[in-house]
Length: 441
Ligand code: GDP
Ligand code: MG
Image (tube, rainbow, N blue to C red):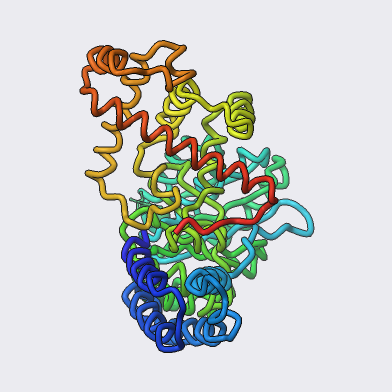
């Protein structure tokens, strides 16, 4: 998601940075480009206009123009305003006065309600909760079956009463949850192709009967500006507590993510990043803004890594990075860990500078390169990995032959490692100054 927007914004900023000292006209020109980029990403006209005028107002301030790094200051302002546009703080689920919490999922047909009911159930179960999934979509027999299938995958029980009245089902499910110690009830409701009165009437009925702790609107980010109109209608008719924005893994242009909060005043609470049950992330405005600006989403990457990397190993690596004793043995171990984290493209898209839009073929190439690097390092002796300086031309020939590569490949790897070490040194230095972040653009 967001590739087009990221690309256009970084192009605009690159031009700005190439200028050094900035005039008001330079900023005006950059803001024109930001405006076009947002409109093309399907952000509504009004949201775009407000955003650009806020950024412009701050950017033409004397402090920015006279600073030593005016372009960086402008980027910083855009980053902050993007974060604010998406709601600043990350929004969490509401807590009930007394259990169970009731989460009502609503939205149009195909938006991802059933999938995300199960994703949410899985996530909550992982946090030690005892969720109950409830089949309130009674109009298609297949809908109940679908919920049962994903419920089983999530290891969460599913409550159903066939095609009985959804309002009655919801009520019964909540008392069932009380009796059986389920502390979260997730209602998977029916959707329609379009918003209509019958759908809203039924949802209002359920709301009145069970007083949900959270009414979450599930919207498909691929539907662009339409998604935002849908959000507005649901909020007007039902009063939603938040949004789950789905299919952000596709090539959506991103408009919905940027506009929902501004248009409805309601936060995005979660985003769906794929069809699998683990593809659900809490929504963090600041991280999303950095992702859009190509500054990478290092925090999400770290969280993802923590799921897959054992802690002891990670601690050891962190220590080595600090002491600058990270060698090729460690790099090899890290590369093997990265492979465990999933397809390279997904991992790479969270790294700083990823705005250049990593294409599938690039990721494939990257995958091959990783393999090649791995076999080159494997062909070194442990001593060589510890002290790459000792790798002379004859050792290089031996390593190339051993790994089925050429000497220039070995040279390239050594050079890359050297640069990596330099970068780590910088990062290490930064850590000491506290949390201050440098913009890697
Ligand atoms: P519902 O009609 O609102 O219940 O929607 P479903 O949960 O049945 O989802 C509709 C389709 O979208 C299914 O094929 C899902 O696999 C797919 N889907 C749901 N969420 C995501 C997501 O985050 N990413 C992708 N790529 N597909 C999704
Ligand atoms: Mg469904």
